[in-house]
Length: 346
Ligand SMILES: Cc1cc2nc3c(=O)[nH]c(=O)nc-3n(C[C@H](O)[C@H](O)[C@H](O)COP(=O)(O)OP(=O)(O)OC[C@H]3O[C@@H](n4cnc5c(N)ncnc54)[C@H](O)[C@@H]3O)c2cc1C
Image: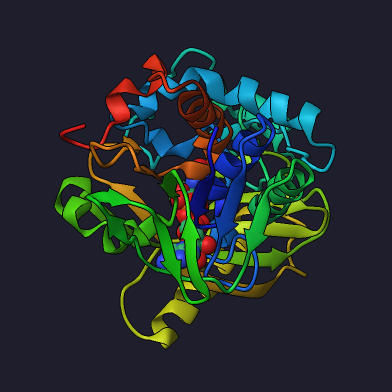
């Protein structure tokens, strides 16, 4: 197959580049930042499977493959290690928790305490999803890129794509800060920047850039065992001694954000015994690409020279989506799993 340029070394672009390269496609991955995962991917909570019930549009059709694709990646890439801890989530009383889906269980206080022994006041009940996992999103992105390069991909950083030049009515590649990169197909995996790069599609794509704040917390190893999603915060261990903590988002000044991070830390300390030494390592607000109608994946031009891949809960979906996109581009045949993800009009 002829050359493909992938724009954006977040989790989606890296997964697409890896899956194409391992099938022998000549791929160049271009990233404007100095390293992989410098977009929203590096600030993700990276809960695999949970996503707070966000499975809009075609995402629902991909859900059943997520776990198997992550297990496959663990086999293919020795550096990829997920934490298959399961998750516990509960809502504020007296609001009822949502009904469990298949693979989820409603469990009571003693079972919750067994799973999270450091919780001071386990709730009366929670939804337990044993198959949920977490991953270090930055490490995963690096692993995908290392493997893509081992399969022959070229990866260039500090290379911003400025436009998609057209010759004889067809996009011939990408124009970057360092010149033209020709390609038969350009895959836009540039997250919230996709509408800027493909302006005619901006209205169709309807991608909101939804802010969310993540804090990193130094903590005793094993303080939090599973992925805990409570009404006031979400927390999980990303590596021994470090927690990821989703901070309820506040619009406003830096001081307001700092206060929100401190408040979330305080809630964590109130909730978990043995957490006195916990302290913030940092926090950041990132803008999540969030197409209104679910993942947008497919050819964006009728001549099939531009392909777009942008979605929410992309950490969860990336291995599946990368595999399916590579299938589609290599075989030239549409895959049915993506049929509800197409850009409107395509
Ligand atoms: C606090 C928080 C919690 C989250 N929790 C979860 C979760 O639990 N589970 C889950 O699945 N998802 C979660 N998400 C969402 C998830 O992080 C995103 O869906 C995902 O990271 C998007 O990946 P991406 O590759 O599409 O975008 P990005 O990571 O933003 O990658 C796009 C890349 O393109 C590059 N780029 C942009 N424009 C150009 C250009 N012109 N030229 C070259 N390069 C360009 C950018 O620099 C960037 O590196 C969370 C997000 C946040 C912020």
